[in-house]
Amino acid sequence: MAQVTPQVSRYHWVLVVLHWSLAFLILAALTLGALALVRIPSSDPMKIEALRTHMTGGIAILLLMLVRLSVRLRSARPPDADTGNPWLDRLAVASHRALYVAVLAQAAVGLTMGIETGVVALVLGGHPPIPDDFWVYPIRTLHYAISRVLMVLIALHVSGALYHTFIRKDGLLRRMWFGRRAVMAGPPAGAALRRPF
Ligand code: HEM
Ligand code: HEM
Image 1 (cartoon, rainbow, N blue to C red):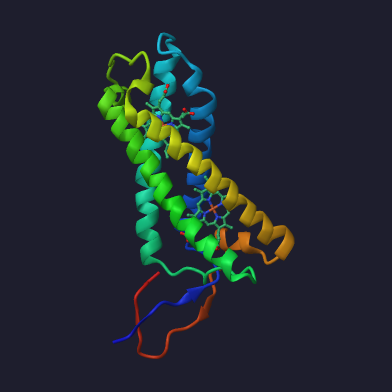
Image 2 (cartoon, rainbow, N blue to C red; image 1 turned 90 degrees about the horizontal axis):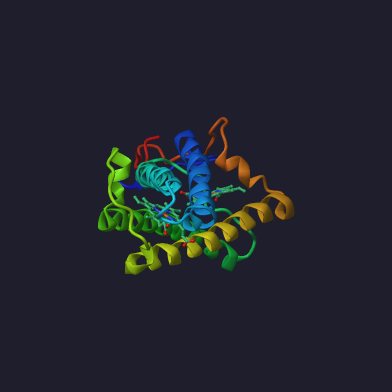
């Protein structure tokens, strides 16, 4: 039997909650990581608190992203946004995928670095020694590089949201907010719904 995806006017409310909570957590991890954590020397007792907070937030981001991906794959969502320019439309789809990949990679690489250097034990209340310099571990450079890719992707993403909101004035932000979720085109009678909610 043919499987049909119903189209709705907004994202599922669970995805809305996850989108804005993750946006907050990711922006905090990026700004505090790049502007504060990295500047605190390992000899400063503050480093322990900063690392613990950063790693706890990073692990939360990893888990919430996995929940988000799973809900995203099972729930109905609005049709791809239209800018009137097919290249921009493709860029939007590609950048959304790249955001998922970059966030998951950054969190996984961070976790691997935490395990490799032993500092992840701080999250569990342990008292491991803090390396004098994380940069001697090659994975530190990878964590840095992905953080910069993420900053560029987020800047592009926010520019896209502003373009839709202020230039095209198509109310795109409403799709990522709460409200009645209208079904825009129902499936043909008898068709099985692949995405049940
Ligand atoms: C760390 C920051 C952010 C990340 C990682 C992020 C990630 C994403 C991703 C992956 C999607 C695609 C949703 C999907 O189809 O699964 C999305 C959608 C969206 N985001 Fe963000 N986002 C961030 C911040 C923001 C901000 C600050 C804004 C507003 C200024 C915003 C506005 C939107 C809107 C309006 C959509 C829906 C687009 C559509 O309906 O096609 N996002 N976001
Ligand atoms: C998406 C989630 C994450 C983001 C956005 C993020 C972001 C960052 C940023 C921006 C830096 C500083 C990079 C620089 O400017 O040189 C950093 C450093 C670091 N991160 Fe993450 N991170 C994330 C997840 C994690 C996780 C899950 C862990 C470990 C469990 C972790 C462990 C570290 C460590 C050990 C450092 C090095 C600190 C130093 O050099 O003093 N990160 N992170």
